[in-house]
Length: 368
Image 1: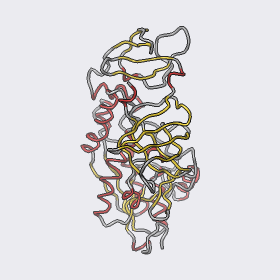
Image 2: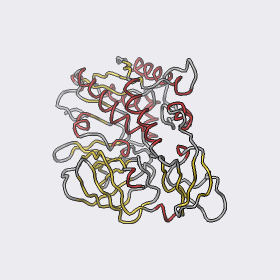
Image 3: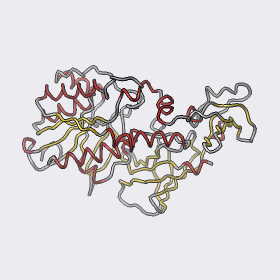
Image 4: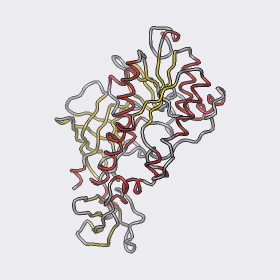
């Protein structure tokens, strides 16, 4: 059995590596070539960078595509670019804009994995006769009693399991994550060892189609009029001031409200219908329970309820909760202790130790 868990020898095993042009996917490809697999590199053209920043001639992440091509050339493997711009725009960018206007805080990277990378790219890999799709994500795929299991990376500072909760069992059976068992420093060392030009390339910190992190300017372009003004309202009903568009605010925000004086106030919820930002004291942020939709389940048994740990933001530590399954892929999550800063549109991911059991999207209607 080879290192990817197949009965065939590496030289007889074709795999596709998703190449983003960064150091992680480049090292993943290099490790697979070193192991003797037949490797095909694929890069998805997902968005028009020039359109995003409002400048002509700014190619769609042109440098990243160039870097991916150069890495594949150095490794001596074929490299293909697939144009998924239309699909990405429809399923990720448009969803991102609509979610913000509904008073939610979306996570486009999850939607991209769910609707493009682990769906369309995976299908393409299978069409090419590949036995696995390799990515540079920092998660672990471990074999359980019956199926592959999704686990957190060994390096908690790099773990990306929260963003992959929507991975289905069928997809997980086909995917492989060679970097999940190493820290980022080791990945960099491999890149230097392989002589890759991207060895010192910095990690991307922004959403790919939001250059410089200015999502408000992107939303203005996508949805003209999205900066409609409205009232900042205390949870007790008092109007405290005016805001310049609810898309400028996130749940739990304290600074930049423009209503100084008195005790600290935090954004509790957003009311897009009335164009209101609702604020209140910190204790009002606490939630005893939430509900989630579009639940994806990777556990063993799905019925009744179960105890686990959950994360309601990628940067929040896991907390104890009880999850109750409901109809139509929904679930109710009851926290052992009130959880603060929960935002509609974010993901609630279920864990049992390091294993990802699944998760769902936090429902906005429960925040009214």
